[in-house]
Structure formats: structure tokens, C-alpha cells
Image (cartoon, rainbow, N blue to C red; front, side):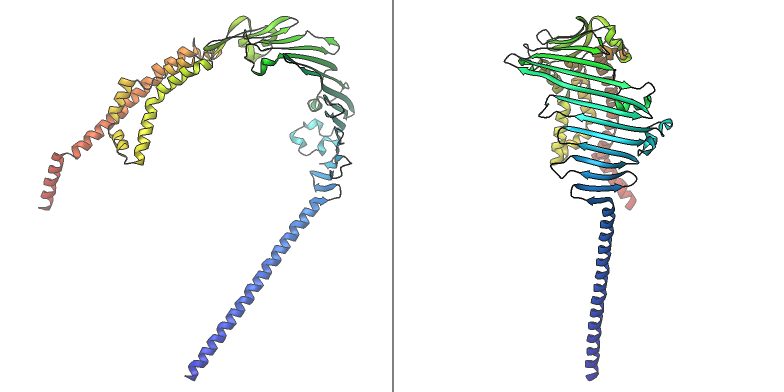
Length: 447
């Protein structure tokens, strides 16, 4: 008895020691994990502190070799700005809160990140010093904006600017009126490197466009019978006055035209009805200048396109409903069967050949030509691309003489016979005679 009690005490003491040891190990592990977490957080904070440093005005950033500098935006009385380097290029960007922004850059092409993928190799050592300025619309000048660029590239100078101004905006009970002007200038030294012209918006040495617009208040809907609108553009390029251009729209007659020096060079005429027929005229001076528009060059009114109007939509919907009705009914009935007992689905599969016969002989269900006819769509250019006389007749022939026969042939001569053969086989296997023969065979086997 005493020995048993001593052994019991020894076991209890051993258990206590193990629990204490386990707690000690667990505590030690938790301490280690906590220290690892603290170390990781310190590492992250230290890494961020080397990239991002808050300042009273904003923050400093240093992501070498891509960008390094000071961003300032917190002080409401000072400019928004960045001053530093991008790659190895000195850069200063400023928005002075007075609706003016500027970007100054100085360096070499090879100092720009990714320069090898943007500029040709011969320009990699070119030096540049440029300033891009933008005057935005503000309270002092709410109707105008100006973009200008100046500086030098590889020792060659440039100076360009373009400005847009709304000179007048007005409206009364009958019409709207607006006047807009766009003007600019460009001055590049004789040997300026052409590779940089696209980036510095090389413009004609001088140009000016004046745009006068007039529109009736009914033009909220451009097809309202009372809608009419005119846009007149006068232009001067390099001190040479060009022919005036006028755009006219008259909704009542469905006529849109463009006149150059008072002579029509482009016309678009809409003949209203259930189907809108659009005709056009495009002078050589307009469409002849672009290979993509060569087909449309015409000095007389020609058929452009015919499209359905809102009045044709009921007829189109009716044709669509008639074409899809039987297929939608099949879908709905089969879908309902899957929710109940699958009997309709099973019968549809077993007697599919009889169903196909009805679709082909009675319904002519796969002929979509009536739907094509209802759309009334016609496009001579597309017909010429297809090598046919008419999109309508070709599409209807495809429906009635290609799609319909091929679907009927596949279902009627390939699918239906196989379904019939499978059903006849099943009927034979499940017949009384088959069951009797099966019983006799079983009797012979086990006799």
C-alpha cells in the first residue's frame, strides 16, 4: 500500500514537471515568434523609411534608379510641386494654384528610364533642356487655355504653342450660338532632330481656325423636323487664307452636307420611311485622299446603306418571334420536365425522329429568310466585298438554300434514323415475345 502511494506521488510529480516544462517551451516559442515579428516589422519600416520620408510640406521619395525628389502639396499658400530626378534627368514640375502648370526637364536621352525602348540608338547621347507650360481656364480667363513648349535638343532650339478659346456662347428661345478659335505657332531650328518632333507637337509656323456654330433649340433630338444646324470654319495657315468650310444639317429633308468655298464636296441624304435609305456624294478632294475611302468616291448621289427605323421594329420582332417560337417552346417544356419527372425529356429523346419530321415538313423551322427580309438591311459595300449583287438576297439565299437544307439533311438523314433504330431495338428488347424468349433461355441454362 505504501509503495503504491509513493509511486502515485512520483507519477503526479512527473506530470507536473512535464506540464511546467511544456509551458516553459511554449512560452519560449512565443517569445521567439514575437521577436521575429518585431524584427520583420522593423525591417519593413526601415526599408520604407529609405524610400519614403514625410516632410512638413509633403514627402521625399527615393526609388533609385527611377525617381528621387521632394513632393510638396500640404502648404495651402505654396505651389504643388515635384523637384528631383527621374532616372538621371533633372526635373521640376509645378502647379502654382493660379491655373498654371509647368514641367522643366534637363538631361540626356540615356538618362531617361527605358530610353532604349523609345528612342533610336543614334539619339541616346542627345542632350535636352525643355519647358512645357499649360495655362488652364480659371476665373481670370475662364474661356481659354494654352499649351506651349520651348527649349533645345542637342543644341537645336524650338518654340511652339497652341491655344483654344471660346469667344462667345449664347442662346435664346430659338437657337444656340457659339464661337471658338484655335490658333498656334511653331518654330524649329533648321537641323532640329526629327525624332523629337512628335513629342513636341510640331505645328505649322502659324495657323488660326475660327469656328462659328448655330443650332436651333429643337436639335436636342437631331432628327426632329425643326432641327437645323450649321458649323462654319475659316482658317489661315502660314499666312495663307484657306477656303472656308461649312457643315450643314437639315433634319426635315434629312440632308447633311459639307461645302468647301461654297461648293458641296460631301453630301449625306436620308430618305425617311419604315426603312431609312441613306445616299451620299463624296468628291475626289475628300474621299480620294484616303485609300480606305476609295470605294466611296462619287460625284453623284449613290446608295450608301439601308437600315430599319423604329417603325420597322414591330415587324422585326414579329419575324423573330415566329422564327424562335418553336425552339423557345421546346426549351421551356424540357426545362419544366427536368423540375418534375423527366418524362417529357425522355420522350423527346426517344421520339426525336418524329419531332424532326414535323420541324422539317410542317414548320420549315430552320429557314431564317423571313427574319432577314424583315430587317431590310442593305449595304452595297458589303455586297461588293462578298461578290454578290445584294446583301439581302444573298443572306436570304444562305438561310433558305444553305443553312436550312444542311440542318434538315443532318437531322433528317443522320440523327433521325439512328433514333428510330435505337427505339425499334428498345421496343424489340422490351416486348412480350422477347421476355418469353428470355425466360426460355434462362430455363435452359438452369435446367
